[in-house]
Image (cartoon, rainbow, N blue to C red; front, side, top):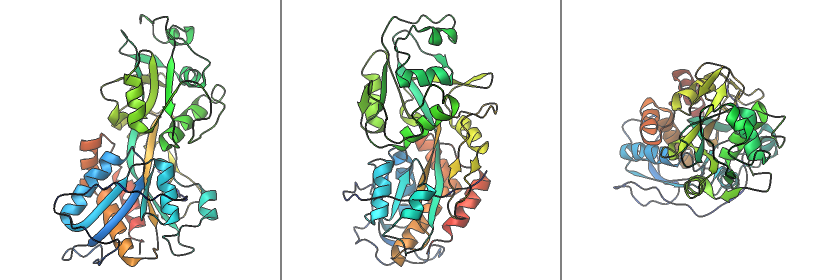
Length: 366
């Protein structure tokens, strides 16, 4: 695996607290001990914002981190990846959760108000999860769809469930004469960025809109956030949409074509696809941003995945904030942190190699 780098964007204020019992209500920053000092707990308030996909995992990491550091309060506002990056860049929060890293161009443009001028970013791929292409179609529980057909559905060129392209890969399935209602995110979304990246890489002759965070075309149904998409799919017959698999477990999901196989969404499949990918060239050593290969034919790989990042500064303006971020990120990439996220959010634990690379990056935070 290889590693990449991420840039940060503009501003939010409201922060929804994920607070554990016993956590003190401290002022931002506060006193803190060195992150590696086992005899002294940290204290203060750590604010983050970003991806809805990471929310359950961040709750689990918060529980672990605050249990070890009862005088720390962690607040995370799940307003979406774009808002999280904007908030981090403006200095409104000390870290962001994002389903895509900052681009190299965004990093070069800056600024990042929480960071010392000229500081590199730390971008850690802490949360790896399949994106389910979930559907609600009376009488149909399973569908096999190739990339071109999926792209046609979401591009609006395949509009009925009994279309010959769908029937061609679903022999024996009774497909209704019913209009397809594709559901997409209405907000700026890293999940959209990862899903359209799959469409663009795997079926670029059908999906001609590129890899984008904001849905680029009219039609279908728009919904806010992951929960909004899931509720919209559940609310109609003939609906299909994309969302973090952990939140679609009570819906049917498409099996996608990988080589000669049909692969269902799973944490194991997402991990296999990530292992078949590389870290983007041109990134700082602390910026572990992946260029995901959505066209892999690796057996068992599920290429419709998102890699969601924890983003911070290498060097903070506020040393107390640096200590809190360092401690929280360390909890997230630890074996215990990855296992508790897997148990609670259904994510794929990162490999031991990637965990070690991530910890090396986190150790540079100051």
